[in-house]
Length: 70
Image 1: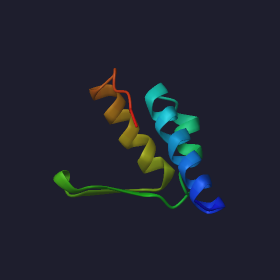
Image 2: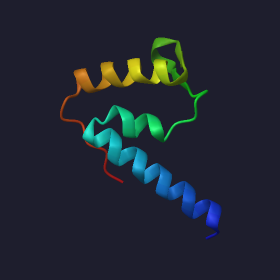
Image 3: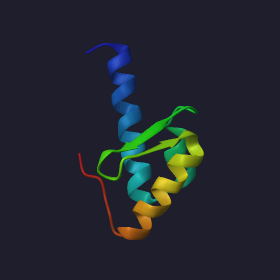
Protein backbone atom coordinates (compact mmCIF):
# COMPACT_ATOMS: atom_id res chain seq x y z
CA UNK A 1 0.00 0.00 0.00
CA UNK A 2 1.30 3.42 -0.92
CA UNK A 3 1.63 6.59 1.14
CA UNK A 4 -1.52 8.15 -0.37
CA UNK A 5 -3.62 5.11 0.45
CA UNK A 6 -2.29 4.99 4.01
CA UNK A 7 -3.03 8.70 4.48
CA UNK A 8 -6.56 8.22 3.13
CA UNK A 9 -7.20 5.31 5.50
CA UNK A 10 -5.99 7.39 8.46
CA UNK A 11 -8.28 10.25 7.41
CA UNK A 12 -11.30 7.96 7.10
CA UNK A 13 -10.58 6.40 10.49
CA UNK A 14 -10.24 9.89 12.05
CA UNK A 15 -13.54 10.87 10.44
CA UNK A 16 -15.42 7.81 11.74
CA UNK A 17 -13.94 8.25 15.23
CA UNK A 18 -15.02 11.92 15.27
CA UNK A 19 -18.51 10.98 14.06
CA UNK A 20 -18.77 8.37 16.82
CA UNK A 21 -17.84 11.02 19.42
CA UNK A 22 -20.36 13.46 17.86
CA UNK A 23 -17.49 15.94 17.64
CA UNK A 24 -18.48 18.62 15.12
CA UNK A 25 -15.07 20.32 14.90
CA UNK A 26 -13.11 17.09 14.44
CA UNK A 27 -15.63 15.68 11.96
CA UNK A 28 -15.70 18.85 9.87
CA UNK A 29 -11.88 18.99 9.92
CA UNK A 30 -11.84 15.75 7.91
CA UNK A 31 -14.02 17.23 5.15
CA UNK A 32 -13.17 19.45 2.19
CA UNK A 33 -14.60 22.98 2.30
CA UNK A 34 -16.69 22.25 -0.79
CA UNK A 35 -18.15 18.96 0.52
CA UNK A 36 -21.52 17.90 -0.85
CA UNK A 37 -23.73 15.49 1.06
CA UNK A 38 -26.27 13.78 -1.16
CA UNK A 39 -29.21 12.31 0.72
CA UNK A 40 -30.65 10.23 -2.09
CA UNK A 41 -33.77 9.04 -0.24
CA UNK A 42 -34.78 12.64 0.54
CA UNK A 43 -33.63 14.06 -2.79
CA UNK A 44 -31.42 16.56 -0.96
CA UNK A 45 -27.95 17.95 -1.55
CA UNK A 46 -26.28 19.80 1.32
CA UNK A 47 -23.37 22.06 0.41
CA UNK A 48 -20.22 22.94 2.29
CA UNK A 49 -19.39 22.53 5.93
CA UNK A 50 -22.52 24.47 6.87
CA UNK A 51 -24.62 21.84 5.13
CA UNK A 52 -22.58 19.07 6.71
CA UNK A 53 -23.17 20.61 10.14
CA UNK A 54 -26.93 20.60 9.51
CA UNK A 55 -26.72 16.96 8.41
CA UNK A 56 -24.79 15.89 11.50
CA UNK A 57 -27.05 17.87 13.80
CA UNK A 58 -30.07 16.00 12.43
CA UNK A 59 -28.34 12.63 12.36
CA UNK A 60 -26.89 12.86 15.87
CA UNK A 61 -30.20 14.15 17.25
CA UNK A 62 -32.13 11.29 15.65
CA UNK A 63 -29.54 8.67 16.66
CA UNK A 64 -27.82 9.93 19.82
CA UNK A 65 -26.10 6.62 20.53
CA UNK A 66 -24.80 5.96 17.00
CA UNK A 67 -21.24 4.59 16.77
CA UNK A 68 -19.33 3.79 13.60
CA UNK A 69 -17.50 0.44 13.63
CA UNK A 70 -15.05 -0.45 10.90
